[in-house]
Length: 194
Ligand code: GRF
Image 1: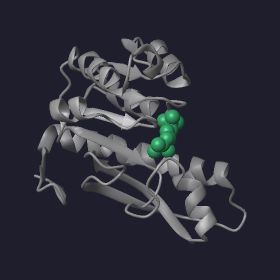
Image 2: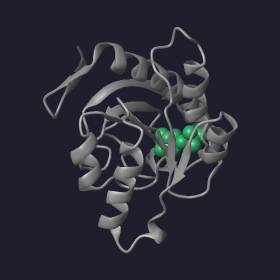
Image 3: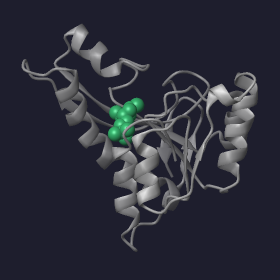
């Protein structure tokens, strides 16, 4: 799993994976900075690696280091949740088709790093959560599942994001289980569980 944030989505996967009937395990957590997600992983006894952009000569070197750090764990699936960097070509070449990202909006509306604030600023009354395959665009990959979240007049970015994240946690746990048990068929534009 790749993360840079507070790690509540990671926490949900760790909790799900503690059930012997859940079909996946979290192999390792790779972060690009010191963050709460790293602590969540360490408390759970998972291997963690920091691959910081600042420790590498350029983006290409960082991309290769990130690829190697993840490949060392031979994952069936890479999950990105709150990972605040765009994945590079080496990473996509190695893991393409087996990377899922959770995004706090109903894509293709409000892609990018400010999805929750953008939805509020736009005045939409419904936003939501999307889990999608990662391609070389920003939140453009084929969609695997989505769920709506209503926006109320009293919402601010924090309250809305918390409600969306509670939906993201449920969707992500479901998607990871389906991905590893059924597999995904994608034509690059649309994706379905097979
Ligand atoms: C989630 O909303 C994710 O979609 C977004 O960052 C948040 C991560 O939350 N990109 P957490 O760090 O797992 O609590």
